[in-house]
Amino acid sequence: MPVSFYVNLIQIVVSVSLIAVILLQAKGSGLGGIFGGDSSIYKTRRGVEKTLHHATIGLSALFFGISILSVVVVS
Image 1 (cartoon, rainbow, N blue to C red):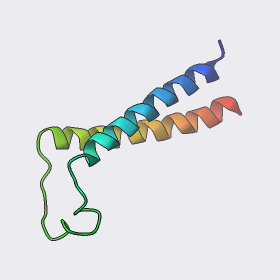
Image 2 (image 1 turned 30 degrees about the vertical axis):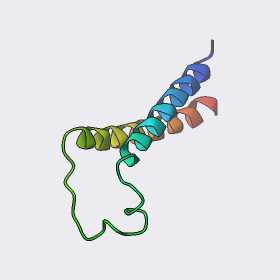
Image 3 (image 1 turned 45 degrees about the vertical axis):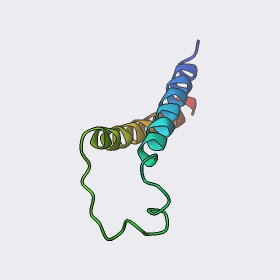
C-alpha cells in the first residue's frame, strides 16, 4: 500500500482523538461560560482538566504536522 494511505489513516485517527478530547474538555463548562457568565472568575486547571488541555495542544500540533506531511507526500 502507498505511504499516502498510511498518512491519511493516521490523520483520521488523530482527528477523531482530537474531537473526543475537545468534547470531553467542553463537557464541564455549561451554558454560563458561553454567554460570558464565567469570565470574572479565573479557574486553574488541575488533574484531568490539565491533562485534557495538554492532550488537546499535543493532538492539534500532531494533526497540523500530519496535514503538512500529507500535502508533501501527495504532491
